[in-house]
Image (cartoon, rainbow, N blue to C red; front, side, top):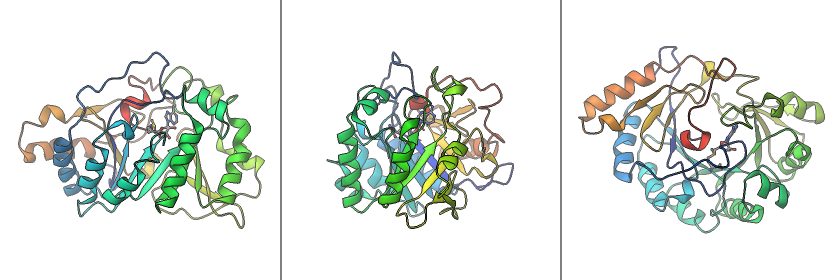
Length: 315
Ligand code: SAM
């Protein structure tokens, strides 16, 4: 369906849980407490998905928290993959426990994975994720490639932490059929709110003049794509703050506790759970109204103050 600006809303990101086995330094505070409070069940998700599909959603990404901490993830993937309108089903994951489950997930209908990988050095990876094991993420990545899934790597650059590895990530996209996307730091905790920690995409391009702009794979994708001649993969720059792409944003978010959030960088949410005991017609009307009123643009550069950390919304 179209919102009040005429944007065609087709993409739903579903956060399955706010729980995560890692605590990335830019995602939430170290002391932040996480609970499984009121996560939407498979039955509730199935009902909402049916309504979203009826409203025009064709693309779904599962995220969190960490989607792999849900034991019923395969069941959820299977349920969504069988909705005829859904043509693209993907997941964002830290891949810590992906290797053992990726086969079952692919058979259930998962098509693509984005793996968060902020360092290729074990010690730094462990520090940035506050406890993660690089080898587990790499095992998950290789297992996903073996299963034939499309794999992208997400890198959040943090000045003074992993910006020294830009060249290594560009080399990864050069040598493997993997798209590497550098995501600009967004303000969701004390560290990520520090503007001096942000690394603009221009810096990456300046260091790698061989990167040439290439046509986007999808018209509404947030990443500006670049590729070195002869490279197997691409480098994508996702700069929501320095190069906002709100004018063609086609996505909305469903949080794990049932809130419909129209914009990552605007706090307004509609509590769908409060309407779950009403008829489908009533629930659909509430969803339609919320989507129609999707904010014009994020507020990251105009006083946005995060009430919920990224893991609680779904990145
Ligand atoms: N646990 C999964 C993972 O690590 O990919 C999924 C959830 S995570 C919140 C989703 C994405 O959001 C990851 O790629 C992560 O790097 C990104 N992210 C989290 N906090 C961010 C921030 N402050 N700025 C930019 N990206 C962020």
